[in-house]
Length: 160
Image (cartoon, rainbow, N blue to C red; front, top):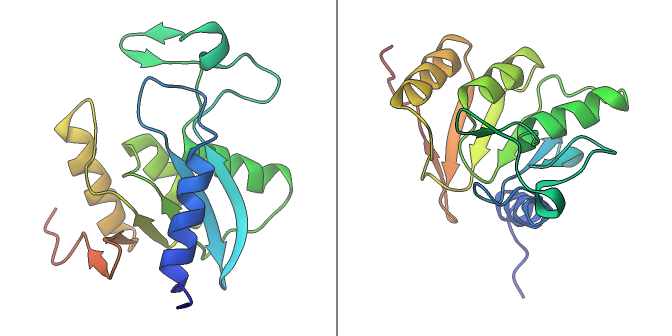
């Protein structure tokens, strides 16, 4: 039996975390935050603790968005903040590309590398992709897609 690479290992764990997602409106999304090959925090798309979940009571839709759900990235960041876990300089593994708002939070909290497991970004607008890429580029965020074999740089020579 071959031992998985760190990317394979963390990628598979991220996919398992995503199975806890409670909002079925979008994709099942998970995020883990890693530093020095140690998992610091996990998050999945779901309601705040103690609140009803979409899979139990339905969606709270406003202008095409479910307001009941916190994105996986924000849930992982919130977990780290709640328990006083420093994530400065860490890597975020995410099942899919982060939205623009989560991207801002990733940068603001000191995440230095984002690795996504799917390169099929689902968005409500091309502007989110463009603005996220500008943000990551300007803030020196390393942004990769792990295709199952290797890391693919998603910002090579990016010109904002």
